[in-house]
Image 1 (cartoon, one colour):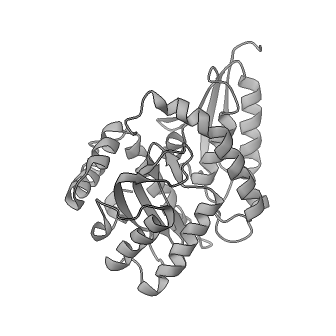
Image 2 (tube, rainbow over the protein chains, first blue to last red):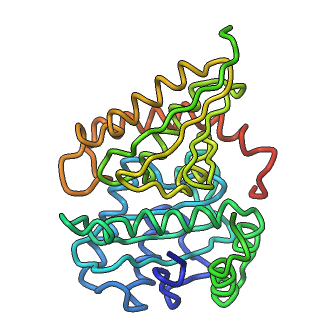
Length: 164
Length: 137
């Protein structure tokens, strides 16, 4: 799986305005709504589901990275977006450092007999983390000033210019 | 101190959702219980993951019913092997604590307890682990 398979280009943001955890989640979900990735009527439910998931344990995994996510029955295919915060936000990350890079994922719920679909979330996580292990990719992404910068980096990552 | 010993074991990812973020956290949490002189590595195919790095573990993309190779080398090899084998054998406790369809949605009591412990125990070690090599402030 590549970024192009699940990242909605129109929902990518190079400058998050939010300065707190719920705000980041809400802003990214709103970007997905604006881009047509999820329905407006599902917005609040998905925001609440992601916040609830965060209460179980932060998806801020260190190195200035967070992967907030949830599953939602009204999503048929995994969809996600990327956002960068130049100032960083306290996301209650495992290393207690601010988070600058956000990869938000919404997956369909697991259904019996649909193992491949159920594994889309794992495949997306696998691709994201393999790229984020590359310090150059992380640094360039954090320095991105525009949506186009981010999209170019994601495209380059998809073409194996980063990662291991 | 125990003698340095390298141990290897093939483990089945037997839970329903594979090694997702919460499971990776549990593996990391377990690995961090042992000293840095004990190397703990998970391998899947050509990929190797340092079990003290959640990014590494997630990047394996280990799916349900796949096997991974656990390699441990160091003073606490046997204890670390026992602890991680127990975690895999218990399917990362998902069957016991997962009520609904969603593997990430465990009952709050247990998960919050785990999370609090994880956060407290790992914070200092994570900072130390990454302080020398990371570019982020």
